Length: 158
Image (cartoon, rainbow, N blue to C red; front, side, top):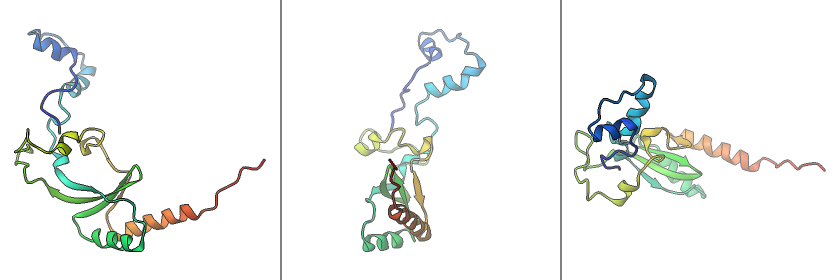
């Protein structure tokens, strides 16, 4: 998570700090200026403090596949794949998140929270390549993957 400090500052912000708030930003640049002066966490509903993501590795055995089929039956459990790495995603909310989406233990929060930054942040778009919500989706994905690995490779003719 980020602190409330801004990451980037536009010229307007620099002048405001110096007491020169009469700088006018052209209309077409106002939205961009707003985005560059806000913390990435500004007005975010703490998406990173919801759902637990656990690296599990790709299933290699029938037993591992059966376990995943069982786990994804729960409506609070999903599987996602990002950069060929498999994760279990468990819906929930951090117990230290208050009703205003603020961390009650900010300053002593875990290192994992501190390291969670864009492009890993859910706020800035999909963080997965594949999302699996049901046993049927898992089975279809694995069948498609098996089909790809069994497909004969074409040889270049000389």
